[in-house]
Image 1 (cartoon, one colour):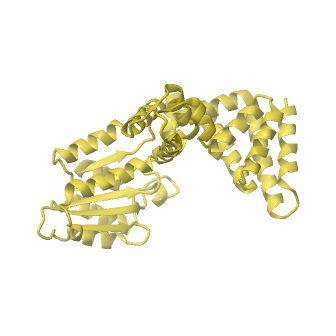
Image 2 (tube, one colour):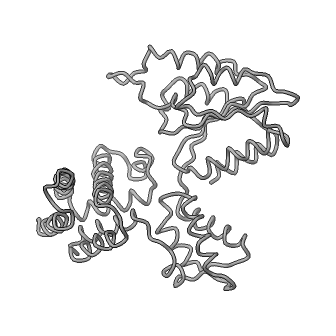
Image 3 (cartoon, one colour):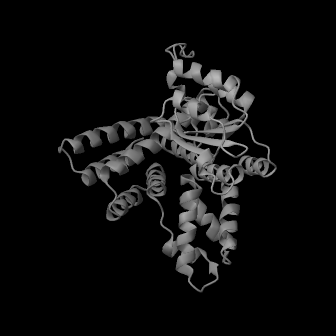
Length: 346
């Protein structure tokens, strides 16, 4: 969370760059940062010096036009472009080099070479960025690029404690850990919603305990999928089947369950492939853009289950999904058969 604290500290001291690029998985902190820019850079009731654009709708010429406008009776304009698409790797040619024909990049690079000193232009990327692109490098040189990484579990626990303390309540350390383990991988917004729900449930009570988390905390579907895969690779087929039935009882759609099962298997296989290629385990999460404890869990699963069994299960899930969509198979008996076969494989 130090990257966020450093950014806000700079704003408080009046140190503002002409251009920023925000990217990364932690959407909640990105939104908070955007709000802080509005708070610190614009005087009260100065919305006429604020432009909010959607990069999926506005072209780069429009963005530059707004950025080049002069502020009205103020020191600075603020232009925020959400869903900015000009920093991903999609513009690469087949050899992996930059797309030389990108007129959009040329227009943006021309502006970035000499950005308006009276405008703070903030790009919020929707997708992963390619740090090899000239647009990325130019913003790094002329402004600031900030990777809004998912927080470490220990940082999330500290954050949960701060949120609870701010309400005048307390929380058991084990309860804070349980909330983070169940919901942390979906980010701080999800955690905040869970904490708010628990605070409301407390009423006049003072402390959130592990027992209360167990009663009220909702274990999200992705956590349940983790558990199903854990049980399957450990040979606990009946527990894995019960996990699937529990998801169905919670009205989760079969197609969603299959998609998340497939996603977890792909994460495990991709992580193992990176290890085989020589990437240190600590680098795998960064390369895949996934939280480190998710990768650790996935690697544990594939070590227990074996890559060949995982590949078979991934292919079987695709087969089941196609058959269900064609009306040829029913979800529950199909997934039960798959899990039983998986458990019997050597």
